[in-house]
Image 1 (tube, rainbow, N blue to C red):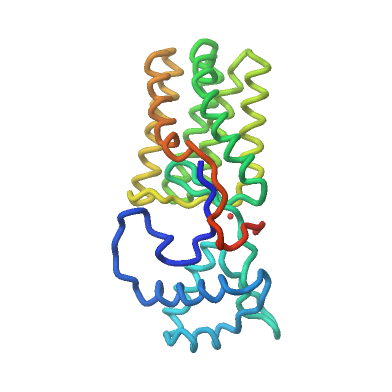
Image 2: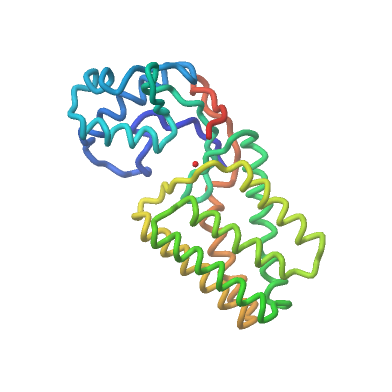
Length: 264
């Protein structure tokens, strides 16, 4: 698990190996990001008109650039006589497999919680295979429906939370109070500190979410059929996505902007 500094610059945004020419909105977004990077959180950067003139772009191009920096939590927009664009408080970023979680605080604990949760996953799934009832299977299928809806809507935030809710419901099947409470506590810690998520997978978001949905649908089917070998094999595939990124935890590099809280 790697804790990373906020992605102020465009070179930090694409997945590794991606090479594409910057569009005019992206160029303007990088100018705005540079302004935000050099300002204290809460500092007024200027009005929309002032900053659009500084970037030298049209209204439409500027609005697209503004959407890009807002989606990365770098600036906020306030209305009113003294409104305009303001530098945002930045959150720590925790890499989780092919996603980046924006964390409000205590990111090291969140990274550790994800690592421990992954280690407990085989025990949780094995218990679910052995002890699932018809009502459990129905609840898991309802959880899949929420993931399906989020994937269809390309809502990465809701997709991740639906994913966690599904794993929580799988854990609730376990008759082990200790395992169940520990695992659910870890999920609650991770979820309560996660503000937003964005994919850093090179595949398009729709393809990434579809693949993850199919993996979880297969897992639910294996639990329903009480096929332990298949279910545990799917857990290994599931955790293999996160394993390379969860090997260590590091703080942002020296000179990187401080990682402080912001409100996905």
